[in-house]
Image 1 (cartoon, rainbow, N blue to C red):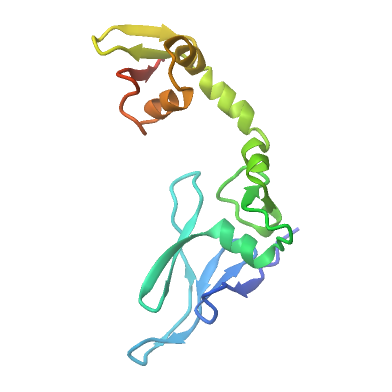
Image 2 (tube, rainbow, N blue to C red; image 1 turned 120 degrees about the vertical axis):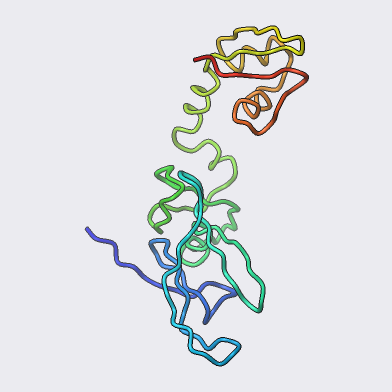
Length: 176
């Protein structure tokens, strides 16, 4: 079964941009500030591999980045309960088709699908903790190291992913 692509105006950008039911964004034909005809086109989105896709929209000399999944949901999916977040049902952040998106609560989104299993597996990876004096200590998991050293497992994980350099004077390395 093939998807039928439907186009609708993007709120606050009517006459300038449209979003499709499969997550594509296009600019519309328009006359620019110098009176020239600008032909509309499908725009390229941005985002790193496996990350949420974004698009930059321009209006009145200002530009704003928008998440494509938010534009699709806001445009095509009713939200009568005023739910604050959008879930990707197949857990693929790049799949922004209407049928893959749903409005949800924060707790539902956080606990959806295989997230908890993936997090538990990630936290079970063996690591080395390097003290300020250079001593290396081996731990069977992030959680075990955090528990025994009185640290935050989230901060340890952030160090391992390069988001923090150190936590409470310790450095962290994945054991291979």
